[in-house]
Image 1: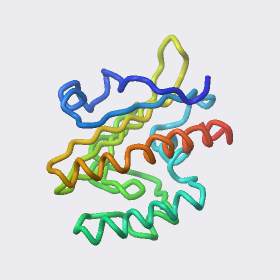
Image 2: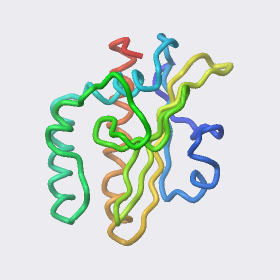
Image 3: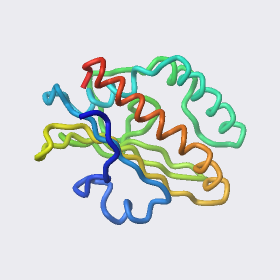
Image 4: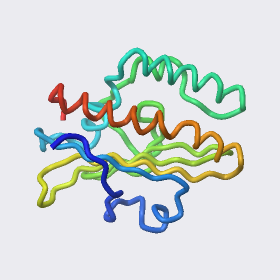
Length: 173
């Protein structure tokens, strides 16, 4: 099994209400050949190993968003993802604050004036086999948020699938 699009898991702490009212939502599933990984390790296996071109695109996007007054990750947070030994709710993992951290799910994200987003990294154990599911939900607050979302979704979809596929191929998952 490669990376496949799937539904946001209904048992996610994101909750059915947030899933249903999101202006955008997607989820991708990848097999876990290393089911002993924690959700923190899965997060880093996927998001800490980006190709250089993707880092450059993220930096350019963040500079443009900062000009619009939005809170964005720093260039150093993009170029070198810091790994610590312990994480708690409220701390940052990569460039995003953690909203929830459990044994099978991590939810991080950011709230901005134009849009809130949540990223869930979840370990799933079901009839398909051990997997990692990465879900993204976005809730827009205004026209700028709607415009931004419409511009970024194609890059998000391709980028996330690439990151997950690369992690599978490199046997980090």
